[in-house]
Length: 404
Image (cartoon, rainbow, N blue to C red):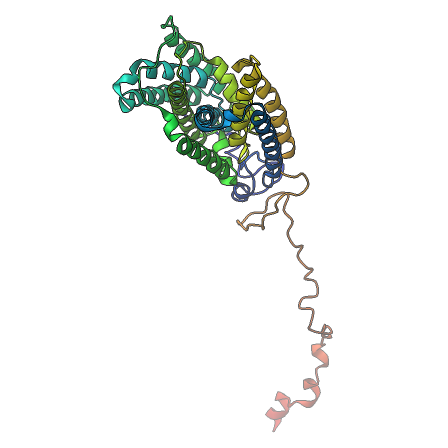
């Protein structure tokens, strides 16, 4: 099955007349992009607001109960942040590819139930099958999205329904059978999550990578295929997203001393997508920040602990819904202010390809009427009458010679 790309059969953008080779170096999308680079400053400004919010909520938590950010409680908080962070990375990666994966929450709950039941066999024995099944499920989801070219949210919602059927086979909460305690390596796990989140944001800020990851984003008719490269990148992102969700569920189950409840997990999807949008990731795909995921996850995690200390009963639905609402405002902000500055496109050097496209100006040729301009103009020669040639009077005549 072919993967046509709208506009790929044309050598230049009709509105500009620029050759395709030049467009590929200037536009984020070579055929329908905007000239110039995305403005990252809006993301950094938004992340400063997230940092201020995280500092404020952390200070309020410390004032409410200083022991909540010390010793064992601090390690528990860090592991919760890593678990939510993996879910936010899973949701954010799929959002960046314009194929949101709404099955991350149910996948996390299913993986948590699997670990609760099989944890007594050891961490590798319980972790390996869960990751393998998640990868296969992610591949099936990816094939449905890129082969049929259907919206990721719709296909993943169907996948979420299938996972919920698996979850509902349990009628009661399941106690965790394993003895693995991630709190002993809480600092290392959090540092690893922070490194992945920040490095991913830094790489995503590079124009070529941003264009590659967001290539599945529609440019005209959303039903038009975006090419084989877009399909491969989107499929890989969905597989990685599914695996990250499974790892998050197992980590959260190991960190919680209580049993794992067989819930639908859609509240975790709302929380994860809300955290990703709150981080500055655009709901339309491609655009995203650098430190946003780390700061948004920290803000949501600390706020949940603070709400518990204050005695507020706030479920994942409430916190996730609030994060979604603010995240949608952030999406409008980054899409409006993050696009290339209007009226100041990058102007490439003209490329000589043997043809002249419309929209390009070439020097007008100079007039050649007086060429060469440095030589004086000579007067036209006068016509000579052959009958008045002096030869007829002064030269020797043949008949005179004969008479002699």
